[in-house]
Length: 333
Image (cartoon, rainbow, N blue to C red; front, side):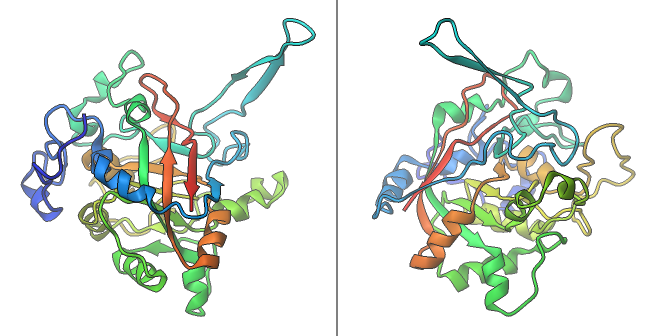
């Protein structure tokens, strides 16, 4: 059930310092909450967002499920699509080795935990098992994620200022940068917005041959800076979802961070998340995050008509206990 924002407003980011644990939103939306930031998208805000549909132009925001194969991190195997027929005039199909976060994706709240506090709401790692469906993506699939979308176009902002920009470099965007881009585009935030950050990383990566991709250092990408000021910016503007067209939403690799864990050792397998925004954003604030979204065509349209707002729908697959899902996202202008 959605939290009633008018009856019970959520605290500011600085007020979360008094929460348990400090800096968490575990009590902000009521006991037992599993929706996290999607509570920000109230029915009233959704109804208002519908008025943004003027031309009816639609922009699919998902890349094909096999677009990023082989997956840059090397942790997910290629998907296999099988088609079969029971008779001459029938076709059916299935997917093998379908990693739900192998292309355009949305992360469920059970995806990333905090090394000191566990997963969102206090779910312990020992309880976040294959047999559990708590914090699964099905919660958002059932609720639906729809509302006012806003796009911030990083490459065009750099170009407008006459500054060099490289999608294969670590450009860490802080809160002041986000404000500057929004001001340049004439964007105002209204609460409950679904924020899309275009870095053009995916566009450049997918333009490469397989041989060129194999030579590309995947941990080089523009994105959000690992700063507390960025958390405060997202929280106090009541952002309900933040999605980007890169691998992590945040800048990669982590160069400077407010979130390092003293004495932390890299894991034996998988990506080292120490210092990343993923931990406080997902595990503490319950923020919905999307990665590898297809934003190029939408950005072109926004630049052409001068409007960077639109109606946005994101409908994850209804996978009980799913750790992630293709977003099935579409923007309508």
